[in-house]
Image (tube, rainbow, N blue to C red; front, side, top):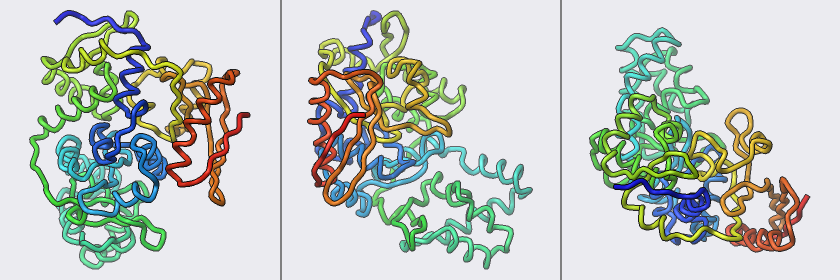
Length: 371
C-alpha cells in the first residue's frame, strides 16, 4: 500500500473527530471504550471530559460509576488511574497485568525484604478479603494483620496503591465509592457481570488498535509513551499488527495509522474555527511523546507542568491557544480564559459558545471572562 501524505491540519482534524471533540457521542460507555479509557488522576476532570464528549450531565455521568456494567475506576496505562468501561476491564487486565505477580514480588523483595512465599501469601489473603461491601485500605490492613501479622500493614496502607493496587492490576478489585471520605475498594464482580479471558498478546494488540483509532497517526515511541511498557514489549505488539498499518508522511515526518482509517482521513476536511475546552489530564493531550503538534515550545511548561500535571487547555483547531479555569458556586460556573496571545472577537465568541457545554454538564449558568 502506498505511503499516504498528510498535513498536520488533517491529522489534528482526525484526532479531534475520533476524540469526540467535534461531534458528541451520546453514549458515555462507548466513548470511554473507544478512547481506551480516560485518565482519572483527578476523577472530577475525567468525568467532565466525558461529559464534554457525550453531552451527558454530571449526575448521569456519576451514575455510570455506581451501577453494574457501567464504568469503573482503576489503575491502567503507565500505572496511573483511569476510568474504563466495565466490559473492558478483562481486556486491560490481560494486556497490562500479565506479569503483575512477578513485578510485585520483585518490588517487595527489594523494598521490604519479603520472600516469595510471604508475598504470594499476601496476594492470596487480600484476594480472599475482597467482598461486595467497600473496604478502605485501613480495613484491609486490620483484617490481613489479624491473619498474617503486622508485617503486612505498610504494604497495604501505602497511599500509592501498594498491595491493593496489585489486586486491581490483577483485575480482582476496582475502586468503589468513598467510605468516610476514604478511598475504598470492592471485588470486581460488584461492577462487572461477565469476565472474558483474553490471551495477553491479543489484548495488547487490541489496545494498540484502539490507540491508533483515536490518536493515530503515531509512532512506536508514541505508543510506548502512552502504554507505559518497556521497548521490547511495545515493539512486539507493534510488529504483530504491522500488516494492519499504513505508513504516512505528516509534513515530512513518518508515522503509522490503521489502514482501515485511510479513506476516512483522506476525505476529512480540516476543522475550522473549532474550540475545545479540555479539562485536567485530558486524553487528547496525553497520547504522544512529543507535543510540538499541540503547543509551541514557549508555552509547553504552562500546560505540561512538574510532577506530571497537565493543565486545563483551550484548543483552537486542535492546537493550544491558552489555559482556562473555573469556579463553581450558586448555580453558576465562572470560567476564566488566559490566552497565550490576543484573540479576536470571533474566537472569543466561539469560546463563550463552547463553554455552554460545561454549563450544561453542571446544569448551571456560565460566565466567561478573559484575562
